[in-house]
Length: 159
Image 1 (cartoon, rainbow, N blue to C red):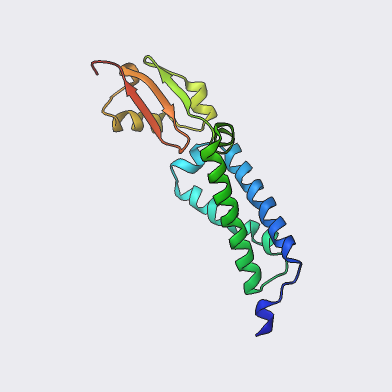
Image 2 (cartoon, rainbow, N blue to C red):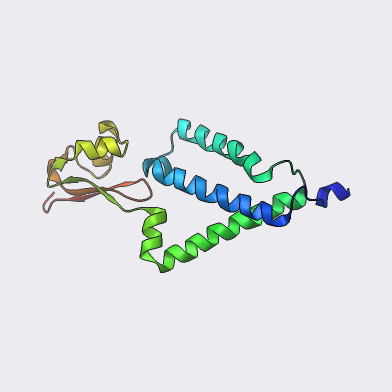
């Protein structure tokens, strides 16, 4: 029973591991683009589950104690709160963490190179157009890939 509360490494190492893994995963998510957090496919869900399994040992090491898991959970939740707190108060931090909206189309012209860079298929863009009541990009004033992965479209006047 006492093994449940015995840590296999110092408490601060749990916190340090949590910070390193949190920052690394945050960077990986930012580098893979907005699409990865917006429109989940079954493939994306599999990657997310495997990512959790992959970083488990980085977080826990050889520790299997209840206390170690709770310490990690508390540290990760604290980091998440701190990033949210800082993002809400600083545009620079918010931009670093969340990114910025990306212009996909303007005045009826679709930027195909931007679609490719952001990993948006022509079919996905056409689906977003239909979702906004448009059959083609001709009546698009602006289309943006938002930081949450959604595509927002502003119609031209009279459309």
